[in-house]
Image 1 (cartoon, helix red, strand yellow):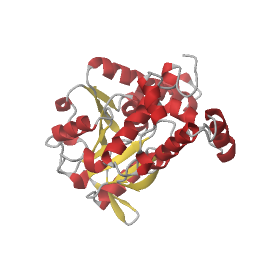
Image 2 (cartoon, rainbow, N blue to C red; image 1 turned 90 degrees about the horizontal axis):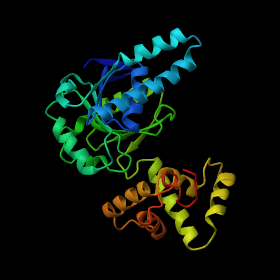
Image 3 (cartoon, helix red, strand yellow; image 1 turned 120 degrees about the vertical axis):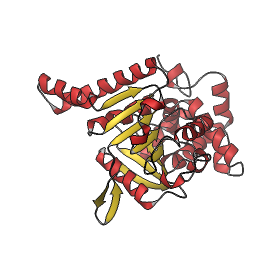
Length: 302
């Protein structure tokens, strides 16, 4: 891996990116990376998941092509050139991990799965390879518990949908070197994103502020200080938020919210900001998970 200059600061040159995970985040990160000319290998669990991932990437790239070029021929050439940068494999051994400049872990939000993944790839990557996790709720300290090369480990928290969302939280681990951190900030800018810096704190910036706000919104409704509907209207019109807290909870998924809250409460049992909410627990137990089930704090047509 070469080093290039970014002002007075040297950064590592990234060319070969390996993304592990074929879901919305993995495919979204892959799409924006191939569109910027990076060589990307996506590692998936099976051929079906990889086919779905490729279809999502092709669809996204096609939409970009239509915005960039009025002529059909130019659109097709753009799609082909982007997909030429994409490789999809089922096994680590086929991913050329030893040639990877950056590996991005974007698998299911399960701590043990992430820890196992890092332990499996550690001896397959080069000494200069940077490894980043896309976790949204776990501390880097916990994700990298069994990963010894912590100097080359950091967080890259993209937001969904990745192609549309401009923000990336770049999280610095306790042992992340300055050159690794600067390299990831530069990488985000190359993708056309706006990076923000964060230390390794629960929820980083966005979720650290968002989750307590959503919990307090539910507690406010439980205390009958105001109704769900009025709280939503107040936060939209009073603060300019595009969605009220309960609309946002339903959009995120109440099961996802409960997973995050329970995990933080278990990790930090004495922190009053992360205490679980009875209303949330009840709705999840009843299978009312928000938009995806048609019922949460509000009712939806599905």
